[in-house]
Image 1 (cartoon, helix red, strand yellow):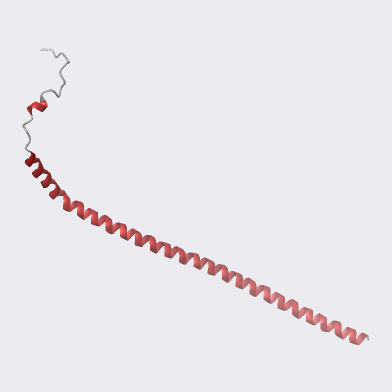
Image 2 (tube, rainbow, N blue to C red; image 1 turned 135 degrees about the horizontal axis):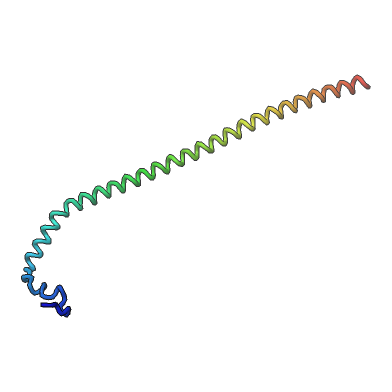
Amino acid sequence: GVDTGDASPDEGVVADLPMVDGRAVEQLTEGLISHYLPDLQRSKSALQELTQNQVVLLETLEQEITKFQECNSILDINALFSEAKHYHSKLVNIRNEMMMLHEKTSKLKVSGV
């Protein structure tokens, strides 16, 4: 016989299924849950532990970054101090030269008078 195309391919399938017992569905569901639940709970606790470890790691990284920043600022301060020493010694030299010049001019004035 040629199919007329009016009938859906699923038609009649539902009618062929036996009536499903609600209690059986409940028991099957409980069985599935009890089978998968321990694994899911283990996974959950593993994920929580991982998350806590990540938080600790991030905090540690932030502390290390702060240390590096402090080190950089200390290096900058050291550079400033060495520059200050350099300029201080220059100033001392200039002052000494000025004192020498002052002495010379004083002697010249004295001898010139």
